[in-house]
Image (cartoon, rainbow, N blue to C red):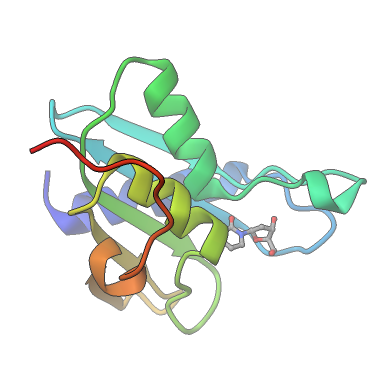
Length: 131
Ligand code: THU
């Protein structure tokens, strides 16, 4: 699975986003170490604070299906500029993937590559990681 293929899956699933309040649709495609891909979208609610980002929905979907180790996350939006994951999602991503690669696509077809370590260098954790 190439970065371009993963981003293409994120762009495809973005069409299913439920974002009637913000109009900002987001698609995410999360590649697990066993080769499975979990796609997800943002799901908003009339009670705005209950809206959930695409990235956290991808983690919830993957963990629910038994995947806990991840290699790469691709994120797609309609924003002209690549849009980085929000702070809440960074904390949730870090929980499961301290060495996650992140591909962020812009609407013009461009993309940038970063890592969770770069975006979230000082995580909150109450436990020491094993190893
Ligand atoms: N959103 C995401 O899905 N991911 C992010 O990292 C930031 C924001 C969603 C939440 C909401 O549905 C919409 O984008 C506008 O904030």
